[in-house]
Amino acid sequence: MIRVEDLVKRYKKADRNAVDGISFEVKAGEFFVLLGPNGAGKTTTISILTTTLGPTGGRATIDGSDIVREASAVRRKVGIIFQRPSLDQNLTAEENVRFHAVLYGLYPYAPTYALMNREYRAQVDELAKLLGIARDIHKPVRTFSGGMRRKLEIMRSLLHDPKVLFLDEPTAGLDVPSRRTLWEHLAEVRRTSGTTIFLTTHYLEEAEEADRICIIDKGRVVSFGTPNEIKRDLVEDYVLVDAAERSELRDELGRLGYITSGGPPYKLQLDGHSVHSMLRSIETPLTVVKTHTPSLEDAYLEIVSRQSE
Amino acid sequence: MSEASAILVLAHRDFVKLLRDRARIVADFSFPLIFIGILGTTLQAGFGDKSDVNLLGFVFTGVLGQTVWQSSAMGLISLLADREQDFSQEIFVSPISRYSIILGKILGESLVALPQALGILAFGFILQIPLSGEQLIRIVLATGVVALFGGAFGVIVLANLGSQRAANQIFPFVMLPQFFLAGIFNPIQNLPLPLDILSKISPMRYAVDLIRDAYYGVTPQRVQLFDASTNLVIMIAMFVAFMVVGTFLFVRAERNR
Image 1 (cartoon, each protein chain N blue to C red):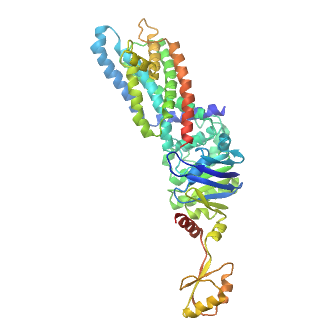
Image 2 (image 1 turned 90 degrees about the horizontal axis):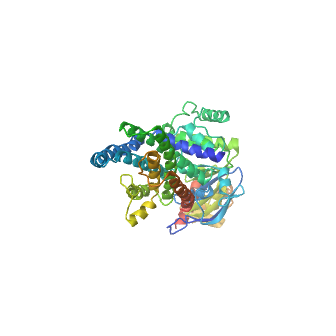
């Protein structure tokens, strides 16, 4: 669905590339997350893919359409939720929706809601009910909560049935309940529409549910794969053990060939062994047993710290 | 069809924004009223009454042309404000042509300028500036043309500016000299050559002159410099040039940041 090849972007007057030769692919229907710290190049990448910013080098296609040569076709195929809300605060929720629907050629223009055609009114009424804003749909969006505005934006961006929905840090600045409601809404969207979702975030918990993750830092891809692959590749699985008879334990671990570094407590690399078989083979009575299963956060911190070294 | 709808919805948004912004409506009306009410009246009392020339009418038509033209031009700069408030992203990721976006903005800002023109006409009525039905119709039609032309000038200025702040700093330098070069308050016949050249390349001059022709064209007095057809030909040529070059430069600047 999305193919990115050696994409480069250098802003005017910048002394380094904001995006520095990244390549990846996103399959149709996938929930794809572009993860990275602030300034990693996430928003630049999303801006290039949604055609609002021209690349300096490389190429990218969305559903077969080239982002530079066929920009208009690409725009028709994508929906986007920007990092900062892009609703017009002076307009009502319905006017914002109408604005989008007419810009995308879904309905002909009419100056008021009552004069818009019947299909449009039915669609807006249904969406308003779905969002629980049936009574507020004709109120200015500045009276809405942050979470509600985000949901309205998602609803609006799906009106033209995009093949890919881009979300650029959509939960930044939202409180926890709003964030949760948003994710539930998004999960529902995925279930019902099968739209490919391309999300950028620096919240790790938002990436845990992804089908695949691409981690970028300083404009370069530093890791790519499923959340499990990333964890497995980048962070070690190990068990920490200790005993009252430390010297006895250390000798035994040496005999068994379990590599330890530092300690006590002693760190045993699992290296494909199961924790159970490893512990059964140790005869020295253990006083401490601690298993370490890496989280995505561990993987992420590992990657980012490696990059900054 | 969908491009035409998109142009209309963009224009609609600008007009609705004006109607919901009371402070802007008050500000938009204040300046022209000060110019006509104070400057026009004092000029008339000081010079006009002695020289038998209707200076109040002269300033009235000048300010009408200048206000509509400038309002529409400055309105285009709101595309920069939209960008800073992230709203323009919603417009720029939509599949419509970039020319439609600019045309929609020009039409919208022209609609925004027209109520101001009506306000100025009403003020002229209060000041008892003579205005026949024929003159009124001619002025209303000319005002529409002037507003669209002002919008196109806004595009070429916009294309060369990076931010709203830069626009606020640059605009007075672009506008103020034209106040005098276009002859809003002052006659511009018999200017020294350098000023005459500057005056002839000032787009505002043709906007003001079109309004003057609409007003004085049906009277024995000849205050206008050109007749309507000459002004229209020049304005159409400038409109096309501003639109094509301005849109190209603006879109290029947006994409090649």
